[in-house]
Figure (cartoon, rainbow, N blue to C red):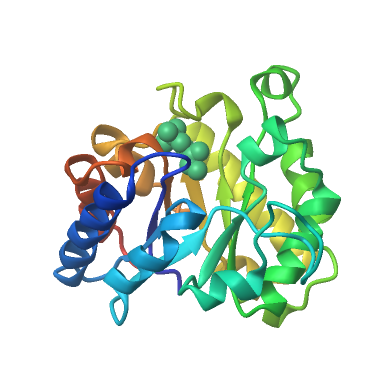
Length: 256
Ligand code: 13P
C-alpha cells in the first residue's frame, strides 16, 4: 500500500524565523488531512528548531544531504548520527544539484544510502536525466544506471526505508514540468527496474515521487497518474500558499 507523500525541499532558502513559521503552518494543515504524508527538508542549521516545532506530529523533517562516512576529519560534512541527534528522520540522497553542481557519483550516493540506513534514517533517493540525455533517448538508461548504482546490494527489508524521487533535471526550477504522460512513463519504468533489482512486492510497495516544477496548478494532474505516489517540491514548497494546496491535491489520490 502506497500512501501519497508530499515533500518540500527548501534547498538553500528561507531563514530561521520563516522556516519555523512555514513548518508550523504545514504541520497544522497536515493534522487536518487524511491519506497523505508530509515531509520537509530544511537547511542543516535549521533542522533542530524545525524538528522541535514538528515533534510528535505526522510531518517528518529531514536533511538535504548526508556524509558518506560515519565520523571523523571530514570538514564541512554532517553525519547520519548528527542528523538523527537533531531530530531528522529522513534524508535526501543524490539530488540533481548534488550530482551536477557538486559532482556526486552513483558510488558516492550508494555509500550515502548505506550510511543513512545504518544511522536509522529513511532515504529519499533522487534520480533523473538531463535535457541532453532525454533528447538523446537515454532517459531509461540513466534512471536504470542511477538506481542500480545506488541501490544494488540492499535487502528487501532495507527497501522499506527507501523512497525514490524521479526528478528530470530539465524540469527542476525551470517552470517546465514533465507532462503527466512523460512522468508516468518514467515512473512505470522505474518501478520495473525495482522489480528486477528486488522483486515485484518491493516494486509495488516503494513510493516514487515526481519532482520538477510541481505547483498547485499542476499537482492534481501529476498526482492522478497511477505510478506517481507524491511529489518532491522545491520552489513551491517555500510558501504555505503554494505548498498546502499541493498537500490537499494529494489527499484526492486513492491509496494504491
Ligand atoms: P522545483 O520544484 O523548484 O522545480 O525543484 C524541484 C526539486 O529539485 C525538489 O527537490
